[in-house]
Length: 329
Image 1 (cartoon, helix red, strand yellow):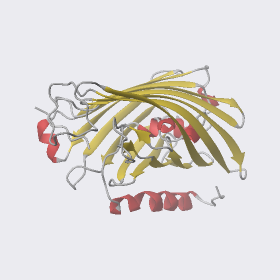
Image 2 (cartoon, rainbow, N blue to C red):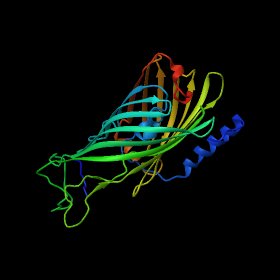
Image 3 (tube, rainbow, N blue to C red):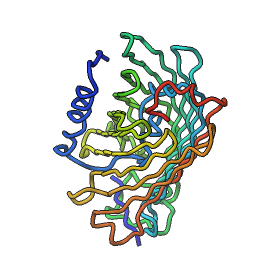
Image 4 (tube, rainbow, N blue to C red):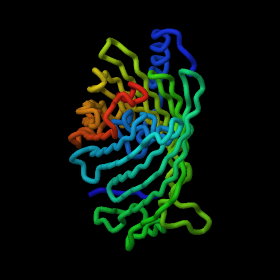
């Protein structure tokens, strides 16, 4: 029985670029760790979820779908589904739509968002996107689930006779710096205001809130041979009152069609949460499909069959040459 407690500058050589990428990704080994909201192993193919400034950055209109089952075989484990559309609507403007659903035990969360960004050219090689988003989010808690056990009697924030269900509006903001085909660095806050998830805001006391999450992303591309590129990616998530999370991925891209990589996700009992394997294949000019499997390395791994994720993407138009950067292949 589950128990719930509710309470760009121009670079002169490829060598300098490699040194820059190395300097960016090595420090992740020294950060603190933990897990935040919905997480996706394919974070490098899904930047819009973390940063509204990423809308339209690929240079083509795209629809992306993701499904994640975390801790398979564990009763009440998190599941997430995401559907997004984003497109450039002018040379300097990007637009995006998202619908995301996540469930964790008795907690259910759904939100829809709309994103807009404007691209500022800094030089022939560098640019920055400034993004804004608006969202509508639903939080629901099923207190009538028979598995719920109270640890504290007479808690006004819990109403076992009724489910908690609330809709909250929010806004987000982000920034994405891009340097030619080889580097992007971004910071995004999808939900700036604290969402209410408490049924009791009495006696001048503020009930439970979801704190804003700040996400830092970085993706690089280093050519190795004519057909093989090295693609490191980084996602860092920060929220007040919880350990910082780190996801770092090292992938190889072959002929702009196949990407295979391995990731490390922080968290768990100190050694980390998981080692992740992922593969993405561009089946045609329009269709790409990928899958990921997370091998747990924390204590909970002994109770589950791991986590898995599937991803599909459809690009509108017939020419993949429209992609603004090979980072997106």
